[in-house]
Image 1 (cartoon, rainbow, N blue to C red):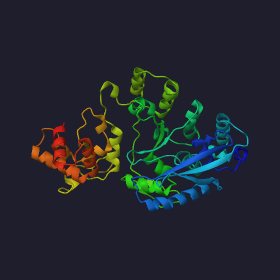
Image 2: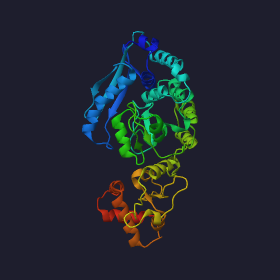
Image 3: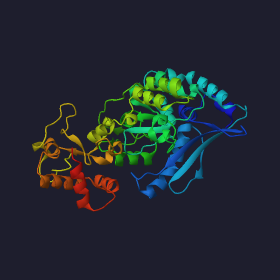
Image 4: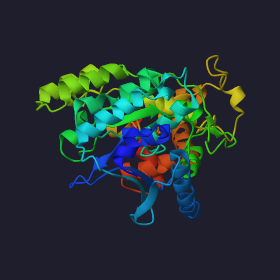
Length: 408
């Protein structure tokens, strides 16, 4: 298809518009403008036969929702990654800014943006905008994409999702990579990210990638897939309240006004981190990440990591009025102190109130506390694996002793 056709024709689907609005690139010679969807495997769904079969199905879905066969699977980057490309012949010789401006105008003047509510056309646009490059890593309640932009106007492209496509702004998040320690030190200079709250997204927008849907089902306890409806997979999910420290709009404003293209001192970075609610690593302070606490609380089985084999949970806790589920307290297996690297999901378990009160430093007998630590490591293999790396040993007795000494 030629760029002139893409911009002038009235029958370009919302899905195809969303794909290019989400990300496009122009070849160096300006002959082509193209959009990309990357398809990667994950440890949370390690059935490689299913992964391989799903790639052809995904190509069919891309072309079906685009209304024509414009996508090709033209790059295989090893067994775990493929790329799908939609190529437009740039017959108008447009530069990046001109193409984006014309694309933006075409979208905002399109009748589907005037429809009331979150309609199927709007959902199709959002699916292409987000899922084609969005990734689920299985450790946080986000569907995230690296956010590529070449200008401040492109940075604010997400406003369209809120203003015209009815996405509730409280379910959007912008992750400033430039203020993270790894970026500042040069260890890992990754792009900033746009993120949807995954539990909202899969309940309201749905997933078109059957492999990604299987990944979500495996990684998130409490995410239950519904029967496939017109090639869209929706999930029922636990309710989750937004806990953002600053609003999405404020974060975009802060980024564009105070970070984009600026040379920042250490003090500037510290002030910005404080303004948007980053943990105060520069001052040696530590704030517990309540987001991963909420993930463990909502999306893991309702069993106590200590006493699940000895007691009925109904005899050890009460039913929460807010969630109508058993109440649990979230415990760091290895006490964190000021070590922010220990404040991760692999170091967290659910404990009933009785076991949690017993495991505090000095609260119980040493032999009983070590026995409970042993049970946690048995029932939560991810925590044992994490501890082997932290203490650089696979000797369970040494690990238990080190955890016991770390109790707070």
